[in-house]
Length: 99
Image (cartoon, rainbow, N blue to C red; front, top):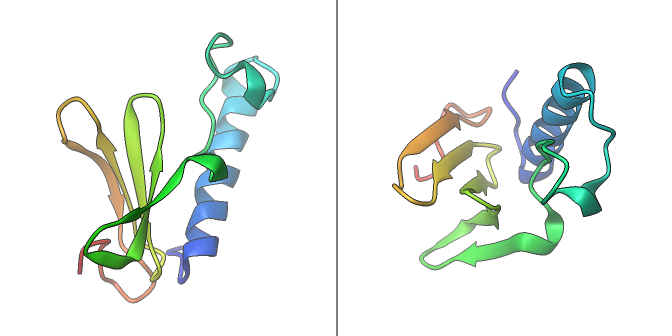
């Protein structure tokens, strides 16, 4: 189900990623250990940045990727080193992050 707001998209990413990691990684959820425990964690709220020229989009910077979430609930994940889109999901209105 597509998200309709930024908050819904953020919660969707967090819920799915934590559920998958809880089930398959065998590593306890302990965000302060992100650099050493081998578990994947959702985007962190202390790593959010505005995107110049796109006031409806926020960028969450992570170790090797950026997660962009638009106010319409659209999500895009890009690999920092290459800029390649790794994942994208339109918002509830059917539009992507940059539309």
